[in-house]
Image (cartoon, rainbow, N blue to C red; front, top):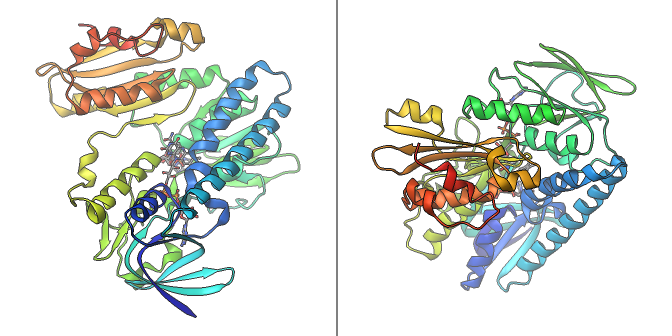
Length: 447
Ligand SMILES: Cc1cc2nc3c(=O)[nH]c(=O)nc-3n(C[C@H](O)[C@H](O)[C@H](O)COP(=O)(O)OP(=O)(O)OC[C@H]3O[C@@H](n4cnc5c(N)ncnc54)[C@H](O)[C@@H]3O)c2cc1C
Ligand SMILES: NC(=O)c1ccc[n+]([C@@H]2O[C@H](COP(=O)([O-])OP(=O)(O)OC[C@H]3O[C@@H](n4cnc5c(N)ncnc54)[C@H](O)[C@@H]3O)[C@@H](O)[C@H]2O)c1
């Protein structure tokens, strides 16, 4: 078996790993990046996550004008394939052409804290590295239930690659993936039912926001069933039936979207002295250090599962290798989020419920999406905008935007909050017209 030595070994072609590899090499360092699958060059986001799902959401909305939904669905899937293939090739070539970076296609596992074995198609090789970075991501959690091996039961990766449009889709789980896929498939004309085991829909959101989301889903024909414990799947000839504590639901396709688990098993982390958290993620400190010469970044490190957080993990690790070593997970400040339903639900900082529990003096600002001229132009009037303002300091404590373009606008609010721009400044800020952004003038008007 060949043994090689390298300064930096990155395991996994995720957002953090690929960005770090390029940066290190541009600073004259030598890097090997190991990726287990040629179909995953570039990682989850571009191949099986953010990019294909958002493309299909957009294509679904466009299909509203078309009568042949099946043809529209198949054309959308082709576009998805073209885009992800092109991005995958671009991601590979961008890294592979940087002097100092080598991409090795194979599965990595630790033999000791600084030696990793990589199993490739051509056999195994050992790599001794001064520094090792784990960026192996996560995979869909599965339901170990009777009938779960039926071919009509899918995870998100598989449902992004269906070759024909199902008449009915049942989604087990009521989180990010569920809501986005519900909108995506409903837009193509599929009859969608969401089965959530919890008793509260969108438990982290204020009830008026959750109600607005439910109204939007109902308008699109999406049914939501709460406290639905899935018990088993019963395969039939035409459909599979999901048997739950709240009744039985037959469908041509079932999506299980109940969270994602870290990819740690293949790594043999015990050989590296790396610990796991109680939830099974790689245990790190706030510098993302997992052992003296080992770091973990992205989903596998238990970081909030977003591409932009994986990118921020890269910034933290980069600062230790190439910078001042000061940046930590605490420097992220507020973390904005966006569920790309139609319209988007975007959130940053405190909700009204959190503000009430905080004991701080606050007021709630509210605006209905239907009051925004641009929303009327778009014909997307579902939703509302809410902001929480500290009545002593006049600073914004949080915002929840359920309206068109909310995924863009939320970044403006994070900027205002991080840089302590008072709410009153947004009330009088000049915004272009007609835009959704100008609604901030009204949202932040004095109560
Ligand atoms: C359907 C879906 C939609 C999403 N939409 C959004 C969104 O809109 N916005 C957003 O911010 N986030 C979204 N996410 C989440 C986001 O995609 C992830 O948080 C992010 O991609 C995680 O990146 P990462 O850097 O942790 O690693 P990943 O990109 O997951 O990369 C890990 C890589 O490691 C490889 N690997 C695993 N084990 C080994 C091993 N032993 N040896 C070698 N290689 C290995 C894997 O094959 C993989 O390519 C979505 C996720 C999904 C599933
Ligand atoms: N727009 C985005 O940024 C985006 C989009 C998709 C995914 N993601 C990321 O990917 C992660 C994973 O997404 P997800 O939707 O799989 O997980 P999630 O954690 O967002 O939601 C899972 C949901 O499934 C429910 N659940 C769990 N077990 C269940 C069961 N047995 N039966 C019924 N319901 C059950 C949970 O109560 C929860 O509501 C997200 O948390 C997010 O970080 C982000």
